[in-house]
Length: 261
View 1: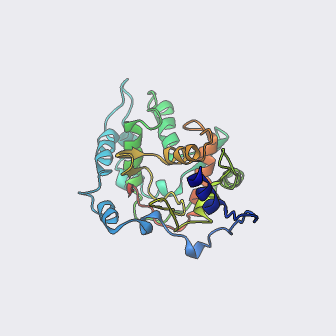
View 2: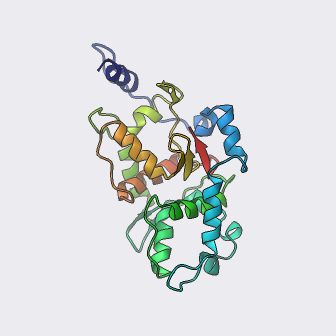
View 3: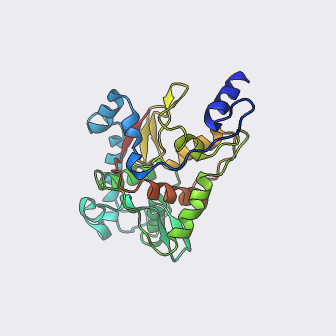
């Protein structure tokens, strides 16, 4: 109970007899990737493709790119050719608004959509190794480029809903994303440094997981941490939140596939 009170005091800005405080949004000039807050050893792991464990998933994605799906459909390479050319910059602008579906769609969702509509195949489930691998391989083609979110019709409303979710207090601990990632970034919660929450490297290899995971997996972890019921994988709320986070991270460099503690 004492530890919980300390956490609440730190994150909510509550002092005995005082009021809850709320910092302003992070100024664009002060926005930093979580990479900058990692140890030198973890940074070196991410920068060296021979040491970065996420590259194992990338290599599987590379193989899947040129492998036709079961049922005789065309491989990704059959439509898109060389990924290093056709996919360059793609991951840096997702999620986008899909007019046909009337909702925002993330990169993993677009891959699933292509599987169903173009390849006439069953889509890979969320968080499955093939989907994470293909997302990582496509994301790699944009590594080093600046995040430039697309501004199609419908994105403004979707991003606005994502921002509202970012600032909404949820769970038994009554915390929002902003309480950690805007108000207290750079501070420590236990032994972990709190980052600003920019999605610069997903899917990522997280040392805590000993494996790859999507941004939605990370956000679900956060909701569970504040004792809230997380949305299901692929839920519109996650995609709209990611859309807002990508707009918030505009100008930062895409690092896929990143490594995090």
